[in-house]
Length: 95
Image (cartoon, rainbow, N blue to C red):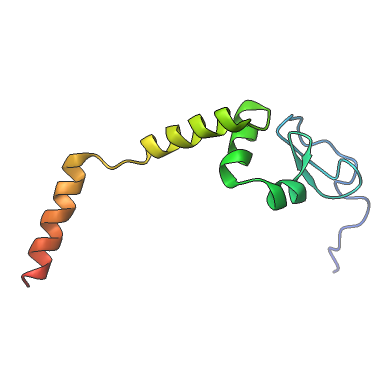
């Protein structure tokens, strides 16, 4: 028995509505907040696209500087963890 599906599938069906991204809005491709993803990939940094997704606009120089500094602050390791790593490396080097 052949269980092959036929018909249009999900063509034309709306799975959900979002302003974040669209697929095939102009017939093909992917957009983030109205910008073609290929244009973003060629012309924007990762942080600029992240800013766009979070704040619904591309950042100006002041915006992106503050955003990058904020990200940098958030990725710092706590001093206690750094000391633990240092101790672990010292102990392992003595083996």
